[in-house]
Image (tube, rainbow, N blue to C red; front, side, top):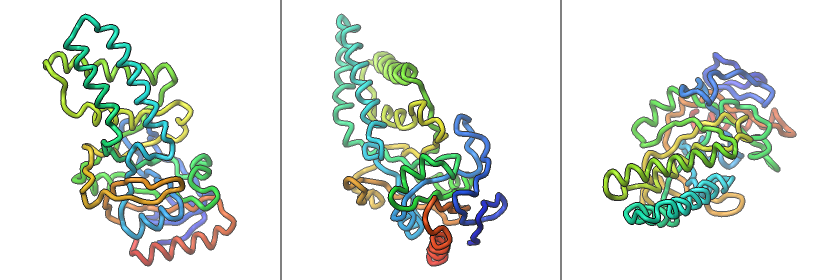
Length: 279
């Protein structure tokens, strides 16, 4: 693994400081992912990922921004309350809506896990979010190799979609309305409503985060608590559940060291860490 102050497009694996910024097309608003996706993490995260050769997909309820889970649920409950009033004279519809409300209230036990990536490996907002008061890093993964590697691991790579306030709420209302229509047509509530809704919410974000151009690995199905790869780790504020997704080290193209007081020492340490774990 070579060390450089500037990211090289043709280098298989490089370490660079945050000044080494490059264009990465196409962006996350397209359905086709870019060639390289960057996973931001802190010091403990980098050591854990490189040493275990796994990506840690966090249970969605435990993301750094808890509102990414709680806000869609709150909006969904309001939508369902309105639907109850609108369908007051339709007992079957009201029954299904009540089941949906119950499912959402118990959704904290649904283990949908996600791992986040950005198309840009040098974002100031991400350095601040993951670094302060320590150093942050972004790990550049070769997207095609990563997708091939995880194809049998029941995770899907999806682009995040960005909405203004009205669009965000409309999208949730439309998702719930579609589900209700399908359930009525089938004559009963379909299985896995909370799983599907949480997976949808996992890729919905407010316009203020559009700069991140985020892509996410989202578990195709809810993970079970007793799975060997479902585990727990210490974070800044609590213990967080996560699912460890094994990957082949050749997926890693580069590691970018964020702003820090001693960039050369930081680069040398990451190079040594990569050498130790044969990356």
